[in-house]
Length: 326
Ligand code: SF4
Image (cartoon, rainbow, N blue to C red; front, side, top):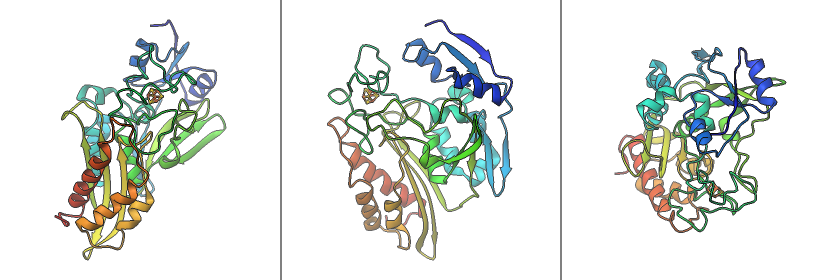
């Protein structure tokens, strides 16, 4: 591992200043330390933010404010999360292992890097790690890769389960920047790869994520289903988070988000609109899948994800609407 300097930030402002000067922020370190050991990332300086007062889970209006340093384990176990945002608790418990969830933080979970194997292999071309070198996944082993939102420069997927549930719940990211605090809806937080896949979010130099903001509970049927190669400690081939409210036999509200399909947690308002105002049925769920996957395209090894996403969406909607459609 390349030698590096290490400092602890005593305040958010000093973390801002250090990050703006080029330091990489570390909290749980569950992804960053692996990247540093492999020299995929080789920062000259780390700024440790774990002493900052960002471990709160507190009411914020009718919703919840979750500090960036709350661990994935504590968030999944919190009574309000389990009761009012069960899709989030389920997604968190589907991620990583118990040991990792005890260390991984809410802010770090959002910023974890892709698990594309070529990104981690310095001998391989990778536009995300080394811009302009090419994409080894395009002609390589690509069964884990994206079928929506990818580009000719990068087809990596985003690995977070938590972010998929947060997207379905309509969460926002609270950020302390050098010019003050701001909030960004999660669906505007991640960038698609285009021709700059190394730029993954809209964060600016010096920005520190301070919290996640959850809106008022939406109720309804809440489901998170993760299809993966083994039952634990594996990343999603396809995952679906659903928050669906049915009244009088009709779907009144539907929020869907997808993991494993795209370079960022994926949401498609047009697919959701297909469902609203209709009675749940297999035919309706198939129509929503048609809209969701209309632009989906595989590159060979990942072609199976398109029918897999279709089947997973149907199963999740069946469960979220109380068994209708089967
Ligand atoms: Fe790199 Fe993206 Fe291609 Fe993977 S898919 S090799 S991360 S450019």
